Length: 84
Image (cartoon, rainbow, N blue to C red; front, side, top):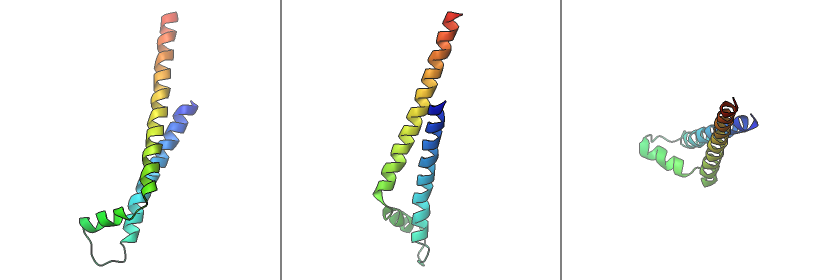
């Protein structure tokens, strides 16, 4: 049960960091008169690179922990069915 909660927390952290990336790009470009897709992409390039690293790491950890929990849960249920 701890793995599923921890995995969910890591996925939540990943989602918050992902939204932080886009919010920081939007805040950086709020005072400019030029708006457009190319300008927003340029503002995204100014966001810190370590943010992407932590987004991906927390996402991978969250998915890994959830998968590990599901595999153990599936194996435990199959073992219980065999014993019956």
